[in-house]
Each structure stands twice: as C-alpha cells, then as structure tokens.
Length: 160
Image (cartoon, rainbow, N blue to C red; front, side, top):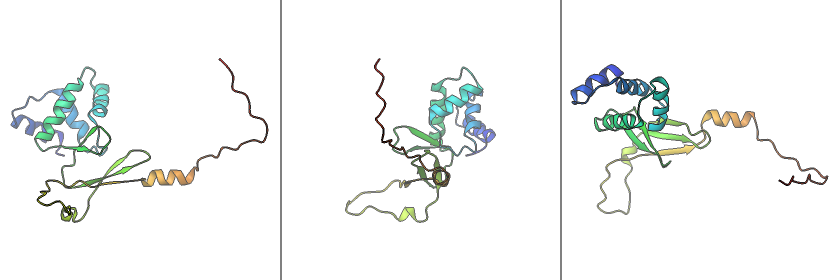
C-alpha cells in the first residue's frame, strides 16, 4: 500500500473528501500485515480518535478498495478482511491463533478447473490452513495437561 501521504493525494485526485479520520485510517493501514476487519480498525481508530464512526471506517475501506489501493478478502470466516498488499498473493491461516500471512505461490495462475466446460476464471485465491510456527513451537513447549482420575469417590456437586 502506498504511504499515507500518497494515499491522501490519490484520494483527493479521485474527488473524495480528505478528513483527519480518513488520514488516521490510511496510517493504520500502512504496513499493516494483520489483514484487519473493519471492526478491528474501528477499535484501534476510536482509541486514537474518539468520535470516529464505524460508518466512516467502512466507507473509507470500501472507497480504497474501489480505487485499487486495498484488497477485500473473504477467507470463509464470515467477515471481510482488508489487505493493504495489492500485489498478486495468497494467504495462510493458522488454525490455532488465527494469524493470516501473505503467501506467494508460483504458477497459481496455471490452476484451471477441469470438467467445467466454458468456465472462465476471473480470479484464483489459494488459502492454506494449518498451524503457524509460533503455535507449533508453543505446543511443543507446553504440552496440554492431562487430567488424572483419582480412585477415590468423586466429590459431589454442590446444589444451588
């Protein structure tokens, strides 16, 4: 994604109104690799600028996407995420912590569906799901505790 200053100039060049709230959103998106949702950006923005509206966040994100400055991505989670990386890439999602990482796949454009005559591919999105290195290392350091069953009688559950 372009720098906040370049985005501001591009925003104005597209005839859009530049406000301090939008400039804050530009700065929050710059070098942001978390693939945030609008709600997550709103939470951060409202902490930095109380009074910013969720509507402004959504409107700004959608306008940036229309301008080609931002990608909208749906990873099957029920929410739209926003990706400032507009280069051709795909994503890896950790099943444990939910972290999303950009992935570059060689020859993904060579993927073509078979058995669907006349199907014209507009876009290819590859999503890898698994466990990130951090979660994998964490699970090896602290194995899940095993519950031991005692041979004595169980304690009765208190009644309310």
